[in-house]
Length: 294
Image 1 (cartoon, rainbow, N blue to C red):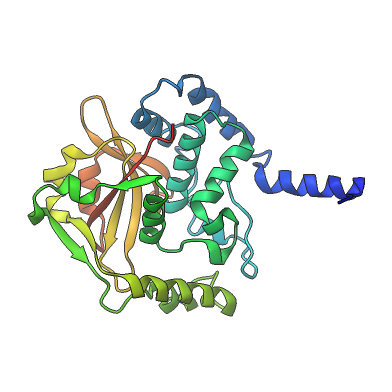
Image 2 (cartoon, one colour; image 1 turned 135 degrees about the vertical axis):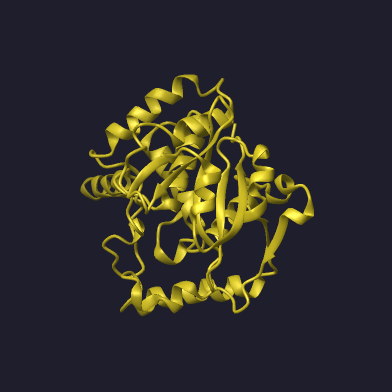
């Protein structure tokens, strides 16, 4: 098929714009890659995850509630791959996408953007309806794709440390609170997408095992740097209330890298167990361990 030169330029420009970071975000991306890529081939995977999660270009970035909904119009949404605002989920996605691309030597902005899109959207195509709006669904999809392993029951050991969450009335937190959510209020198309996802999740919900909040201290020694720790919600219609990344210091102290609404920024909370005890509306945790993609 013949493509006119002017049209070819437009197509190329659109592809680059869709796949690349903005000029504002390139310095942060380049700093992360330039710091970690030279030794990534020989670096332990858990060490690479921790180094990515705690990189100075990410720590201190502003917290932003629902950054993917910024400027929402219809069900279309651009791929937001930058570093100018995170909620807890987009921070975890960004760290995982960066670590996976660096580990495999694919260090262009386009490689990183493609990895992020694959993690975030069904079919890797950005769009509100293709986004997984409940974290448990997102994590279980990554488990099925070989990106994560769920190690909740493995870490728990004694079955007495476990409980099971099954949402009594199904997944409905987002649709039930649509009037309070800027992206959903006044958008029947978006509300329809959310309702469809909720119905599908409710239909297959057979219960998810989690480590009881009162048991976390007893099993914390089994956590590893880079583990994704997700707090199970004690909120009707919601599965996960918060997520962060485990950091382990040389002295064995466990910390949590997270995008914190409370602190309004990305930070490392210096005591994971103390933080876990302070988090409200949660029953316990599920733990997901990223697989080395090399």
